Image (tube, helix red, strand yellow):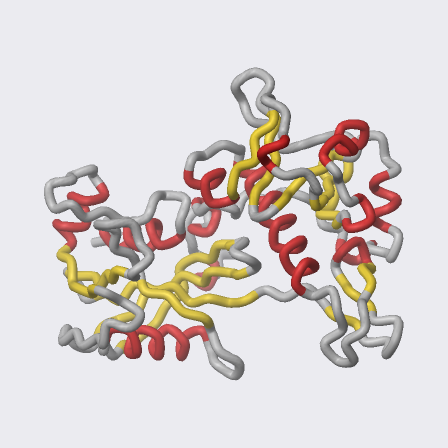
Length: 313
């Protein structure tokens, strides 16, 4: 039986974005307070080492390998008591571990590369890139949530890294994911792109902003576009999502129907905002550099929003 509700493309749009290829079996219902320790005792355990927003990658033969075995990690000051269990793969358990050694002290065959560069440069395959995003988000959360927000006492890692417990007041704390709406406001023939002051010169992208408490995704899309550009939206539709480990967000990509084209922005969040025709966007995506304008790379969900609209009828 066919349901129109599920009439989608063979591949979900989210499968095309960076950080979204994680295939680890998380086995969330089987996590115990000792699951990370048990996993470290498995001789097949593979560890990802991370430090200061970077992942350590072995490069023995020109290819990058993000996995270390237990015998290898001692030389990198791995804090095994702070290891988080990402889950299990066909090759065994996978864990993310904070490393204690500074990147400058690494041996020649190991490189410390920031997560964004790993994504943009395509240094890892999709499953490893997704596992890296999972581990990076968890380690970042633990690094900033070491104390109980209720009583201020030092909390303890539990459930393989998916919970922190306060032994003083018995409060449990769980890893957070911050939802971010990223949206492309469109008319039939034009789309709205903006420039943040921190962008590379010439780059324009979709607008984005955090979803606030008590707000639906659609309401956040309309509010952010109105606040940043002065454009009011009508219909809003979801397109795709992307895990974003900076530090632990989920990008929720949407299209919004512009009800008018009169841009009005104050320059606080954006330094420029303008409409682009479908022909202009297609030229930019095709590599035309004559305008000096480009859009985010294909590793970013903004690129997929822009391309999906440009290639639509």
